[in-house]
Length: 246
Ligand code: HEC
Ligand code: HEC
Image (cartoon, rainbow, N blue to C red; front, side, top):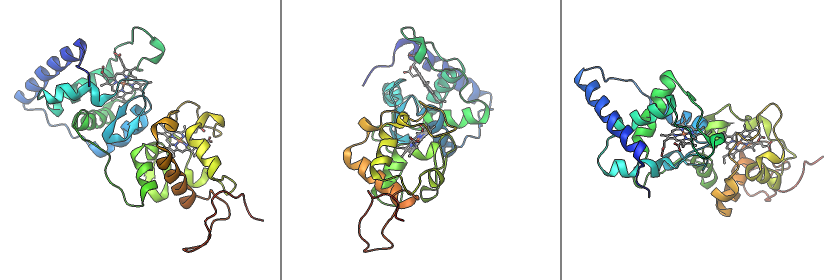
């Protein structure tokens, strides 16, 4: 969408030079794990940045697909973009207009930085990138596409995030569908005890279509204690709005 701005172009040039030097000196063999990088990205970067392959949609920082699309189209490779990402994480440029939204330095370092940078280098600006397909139906896909598992443990999704509460334990039988929906679209309405406010993205109400939201709520109702008196087994009566039965 946008041309990379001047700083990015300079960074890209510097990173390309560096990559060439590293390859020439024969020590360019980093062991990065992009799958791990994806999870870290969802947890640490997805709160501010949209990236299609990660399924993140936050808008505090620039959309990283847009930021690197032109560079990628111009033939810059993953290694180059990886270098720019590392430089930005280690020495974030301050936002001149509004320092309060600037990216904090060293959000990740060491192996975590290697993995995140390799992951972003692999996917940022790749046309048509989308999150991997997962089993479990439409709600499972919404959960996977929106980075929920990066922050939340949910057994059905096989996710192990610990930034937010474990949804298998936190959601209770008296959380009905409307309540679960509110937790997703308005997470600050009630803050889960012991967890920080403003960490869960606040924009799922806009980012998800009404159908996606409904599928997601249904998925959580089916796979956590939420939803109280649920139908037992197939063919049971749909009841996801009632309170606990007793
Ligand atoms: C608190 C919000 C926040 C978090 C968390 C965050 N960033 Fe940023 N990031 C920003 C902002 C704001 C900018 C824009 C800086 C500017 O305008 O120069 C930015 C810029 C960038 C850029 C440069 C893109 C461009 O177009 O200039 C990259 C690359 C980047 N971030 C990667 C990351 C990675 C990787 C992580 C996770 C390790 C991360 N960011 C975490 C807010 C954040
Ligand atoms: C970047 C981390 C992050 C992401 C991504 C995230 N959450 Fe959360 N979530 C949190 C944190 C932290 C809390 C606890 C603080 C609070 O209640 O807002 C939380 C709370 C919750 C709660 C309990 C809410 C409450 O009001 O007490 C639910 C349910 C939930 N998240 C579901 C989701 C779903 C579904 C998604 C994906 C659409 C998601 N979260 C994405 C971090 C995240």
